[in-house]
Length: 167
Image (tube, rainbow, N blue to C red; front, side):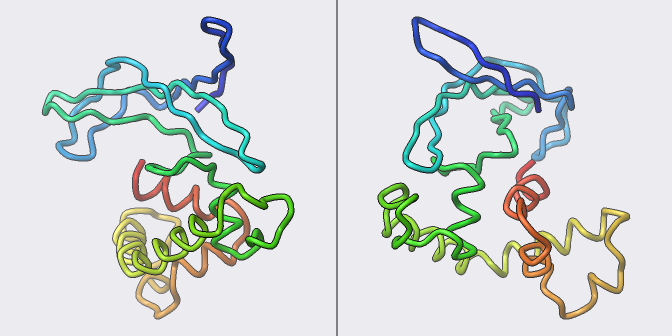
């Protein structure tokens, strides 16, 4: 995805354009066609809000799909970087840089989300892994957690998970 900046009625916003078009519907496998754009507001550290136009794509089966850039998480208002730092305990409620953004309750909710979905994420990663040549069968059949391996490999593990599972 490429990120562009635009101006509409004096308000600055961002919009993305994917070079992977046409997309494929994850429900039926049909071709996705451009329908329209939708405004999405997201937050960065310090609570800075930014606006982004997200492309909506429609399939012949009637489903709508949002084209979300890698730095955002579906159904979350904060960027991947903020969520990842909270989940990895890099950012804590005691940090002055993230004093109220996100709040302590939101941080706990994100950690609970990861804890509740750990098995499902692991299963999806293993299922997808069998289809990707870069995963070895030995790794997939081992007792090593793919999620833990991704988290320990460095930053952007959350973006990688969302790219594999949701995109």
